[in-house]
Image 1: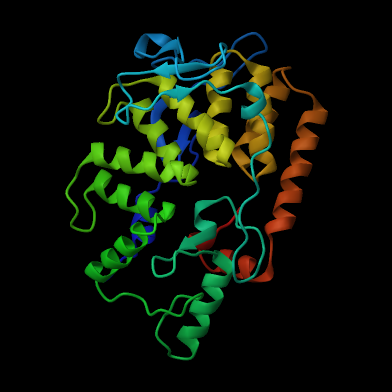
Image 2: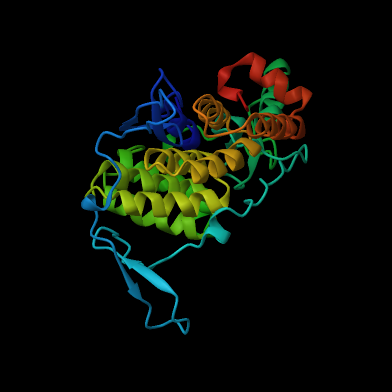
Length: 332
């Protein structure tokens, strides 16, 4: 059986939310850092291995190469890419992120949920679950070979062919292909040797090229200390990069981090942005803030309305049919 790289990665993903505890998530991967829910109006969530600066070697220094005296950089021995990390202003952080690209077949905005779209290594296109499912069902009905819905290339018949296609996309700096290839190094998939340092390096490259999920992954390895020392400051920094690029996972995680630090107004702002892009757990968090007196009914109703508007924008008959067929095509 041949597994598409994106399909193989989806098999590694876990359910995004479980139980009553709040947790960090990165593309479906659950962190071992658990936040206890607020249970009264005076307490705040606590975090096992609480976020603070004791875990990090990050320091703020003036950037000699920048003409602005107020420009600072974060220098960290934990950052394997040896990149100076620019300080991010609130104006940049809380600005509404760019809208998702449209599906090139139905021209509707792509869903933010990972199961709502599929990447094709043959042409580098990301198609929505509705178009993918509709064309796959038509091929099965007509007894035709499964092909890429966009470029009509036949599905690869071996993992070797799949890797060759992905390598061809790497040559043109395809961010999604680089992201997928990094996962192969991170998990030792498809015959690629396990090398997490190389995976992090590739995620940096994919992030620079516009793949926000790559920054999610970098944040996650720093949060857990997976092949690098634990560094919660760097985790938050990369969540910020991912959130500004449109990652709802990262935006939700920033909300949890701010809530755990007692910065409830900032947490609410992050949750509102995530909800507006369809993220449902942030709506739950706003409701919890309301119950504990840290948000208003208007905050909750407004968040509900913005999420409903997003769902209406991405909804289609084909996508609903796909989601009803299997959770693999769930898109909100």
